[in-house]
Image (cartoon, rainbow, N blue to C red; front, side):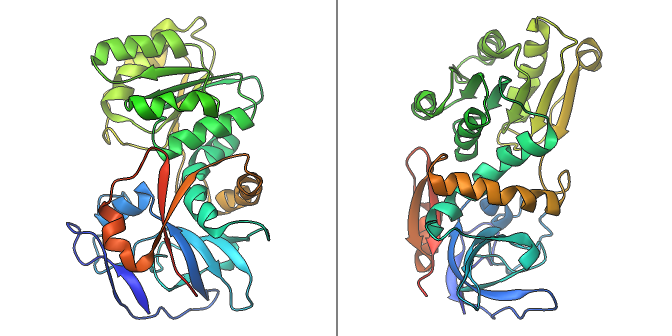
Length: 320
């Protein structure tokens, strides 16, 4: 088969011949239709993701839409031990797949499920998010952050504070449901102060940044809370600004801060899969939107490095 193949962590994948994977017990070989080029895919392909084992060559891709031997279309999350989904064919475990509605667009589903899944699962599995609660999306200008704003609105949030560095992308978020936007550009101390002023009393933080922005944001928010005993669920999902923070111990004693992660391991595979049908329904209905940019799999090397417009998600497509 033909596939996107990574042979060096320093270079983008190339379109090459690769051995077709052979299914073992419980696996099915599917014809791929579409696979999204997510940040998670990029970090796996450059060896920086926390699940990377350093082995090469590899086929990137963590999910996608494929066609089963009986013709049905499914969205699936690839097993961690299987070759990736950016290929003409891929392996799936039927337990990690959900059928596409008849009217669903494979490219849209491949573009949106991964970025939407992070906050959808976090707000439904890692915290008890109810209508009327408030939320801060830290790192809201990425695709996953944009989705988090929409999902928070859909789940009934009464206040949605969106924070990010890109002013062009930040300005677009009010149309998606953000009630307040905060720029993280410029002086870090001033940014933390503005963030605290807007979001000190939120109930939940969805954090895609970590690193220095989070290190400054946590003390700033907690020092401004009207009621420090009110729980604040800080859900760590991404680490765009760095993998580590330093947090004074007094912060944890002086407020009811609950830091947790949401991702592979903190939520079971079964729990993640259980959330996918309802998420796919909302995507198919257009409740949640994404700007998908389809590119043929054969153009993977160019697609990997080409710039995109705000909100766009590249999807590699296979014609079968």
